[in-house]
Image (cartoon, rainbow, N blue to C red; front, side, top):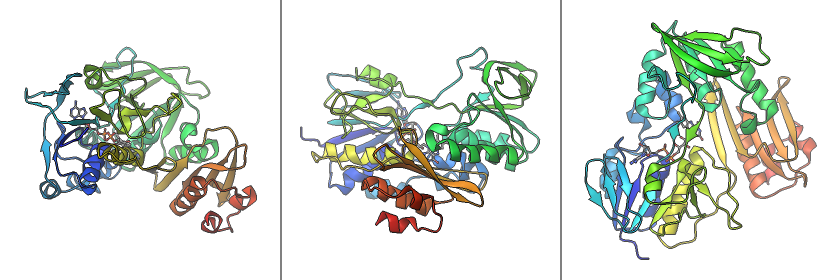
Length: 409
Ligand SMILES: Cc1cc2nc3c(=O)[nH]c(=O)nc-3n(C[C@H](O)[C@H](O)[C@H](O)COP(=O)(O)OP(=O)(O)OC[C@H]3O[C@@H](n4cnc5c(N)ncnc54)[C@H](O)[C@@H]3O)c2cc1C
């Protein structure tokens, strides 16, 4: 199929990366990015620098407006409402229509809401867009009682900023030590302990109901399992940070196969030969038919954009190594690579008597995952070890006097 026009629906990092790589790869045809939010911007700063005030909204842009002019990429500030499966015609919210040769769905996910009584109260906020972040920033003022439901990456980052701003913060999660699947038990414990050290109240439990009473939101908690504490939490502001929903009505209109994401091959191709899907909304179907775990991380979304661009240009998609992510909270920088949950065992490297680096070793002795607190260089070295399949002596990994870069050579 020769492609002379591409419409990318969604201007997050995956959509932007796809546009950039198409142009870098020599694509000279019509290239359009459709997004109701206008110029593509980056999401990680929404729970970090934009919330703390270190960044303006312009600082979150993935490229200045001039980049789109220079690269002849049209930005349509509009929402795609539906795609006709047979013709590939895209119908926009404004009523406009376009029928490009190739469509890339880069629509991300929607912040998941609580399906409990009161879970849909307008006063309960989520954090996925720039507008969400700007509205939240206004509310994180000294003395505000903030309850955050979900102590994963985003919940913890917001908790950190809120407490810095002088808010009274309560963090609620069903897991006594959240984030274990992402960073492993040992590092998760260190990170979780920082909340209490900074004056955040942590509860283990599930909210069962939220009521708006005057200006206050009352959260009923089930269990508070292993925690002594009230089963009712009152707050001025409730943020729900419990992940994303990836079901895409747009993909459904195009009759694409979806199962916990839009199913794609390694080049981002969906079940419709004119349509690709990338980023948080896409889920890889391996060649043997098994479905891969989705990575809701920035780098893997950017890589998806590169892979789809190659596939549209008729090239073999590049191969990428292990999935990488980062997070910033309480003045520390966390990075992780690969998997901390696969069968095997964990080796710890300590600093000042606390785990600072964790390595996951599989049953064949290979390093398959690593996480570090303030150890970006170590994670880069671990990435090389993992991607090369190197076997490294666990005693060397645990020894803080041994330079990981040397082990990675
Ligand atoms: C607050 C926050 C902090 C994060 N921090 C980190 C971090 O520190 N490290 C990390 O690795 N990852 C982080 N992530 C995850 C990372 O940002 C995502 O994995 C990444 O943004 C996914 O990119 P995407 O292009 O798939 O989707 P998105 O970035 O969600 O972009 C999707 C775009 O599609 C548009 N869209 C949706 N529907 C339509 C439609 N019908 N028509 C047209 N446009 C549409 C949306 O407006 C949106 O702009 C964070 C995410 C959030 C929300």
